[in-house]
Image (tube, rainbow, N blue to C red):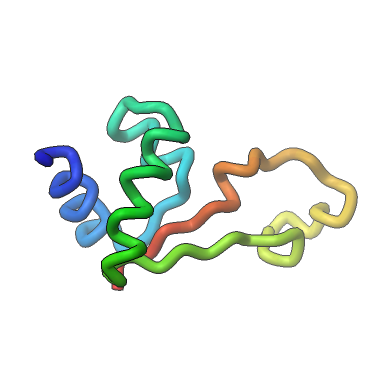
Length: 78
């Protein structure tokens, strides 16, 4: 259960992070991280947002595949 509280503490500290950053920070696979984050989402402690093509600041998103799907999955501590 230590990792769950570590995730909580990290998101409280940084405020928001995407799936790729969280996975890299904790050194675990993105699918495992998603599963752990879903615990906090179900408890209402974390909000989940998916940035569509309109959410990118590069202005190239209509025909760009530069960003991975995991960078578009944003988790925010409430």
